[in-house]
Length: 385
Image (cartoon, rainbow, N blue to C red; front, side, top):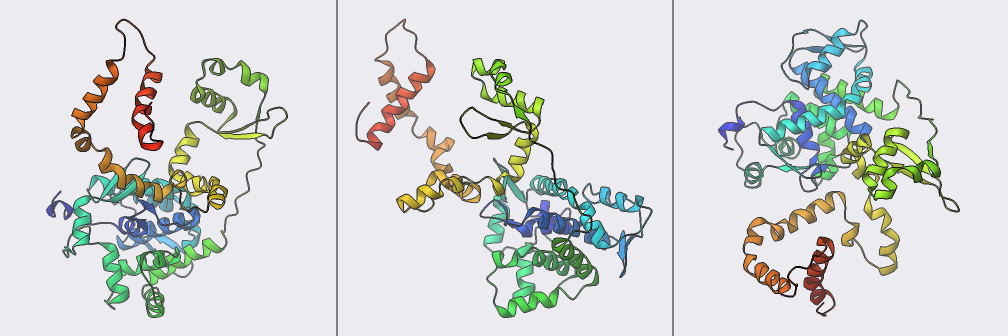
């Protein structure tokens, strides 16, 4: 990737908002509650449409002034939905109505940033700046018309160096401030916080959209009913008759139960507490995107750490901490590292195989376990096995 390749297309306000909210070290967004993040992302879309002269607003409503498509797959569906509405509504109404679209908007934006070589995607849905971008950011190699004109550095100059902000920067400051993320990005003193409040008052569209987002965080206009559907129970007879119980394929077992009972179901074993299961394709997709915020390994190791006076034991690391650990250890498991150890690997393999008898058959699982134990036992307990 070259500097020239980054200049072909400028970043949209939504792109820059996503980059601003992304925790580069943790590989995912700063801990912003889901509804808060959704409202901020939708606010960014509305602001971008306004900057492209498709939307305008007054004190009472937000309305379309140009229905022509922008060519941006993130913006055009939102523009069409607003244009098709026969009645005008406030920005606050549209922020809440469009909030369920935010997840797909974030996915499209992240994919686009990866395609353009600005972000790098890692297994487990983590994102970090691509190496060339990271190096330019680290050494301050900024250019005025580069598409990745690093938003955090630019906003930092607006806040701390009193640079005059562009209208787009004002909107980003408003939205990020609404998410209460600045304290996680910069070290703020009283003067910086006052500067942020001042910037948030500079632009009418930014102020109105940020106000709409803030109002929705306090109390949504369109009240949603709570889910009251009873969790279905899998009978023990039905469970034991499932063919996958006999063949031991647990993935297929719970997958088939999810198809029959839905993504959430419960099993009530005799003389034991009920067990609630989340299974199926929809659940796995949700886990991939949102599970890190609700199902955390460290919650289950809390008592263990208290008993042993430990903090941050390796099995309890998850989310951003696990991503950083995996990134730190990756060179030790790289192809280059393995290639340098092939002679020793062949030697140990041949030594173990010399103990095998010709013509005998062995189970791959038990054989592999024995070979692994032969390597680990001297390291862990000082005994050859």
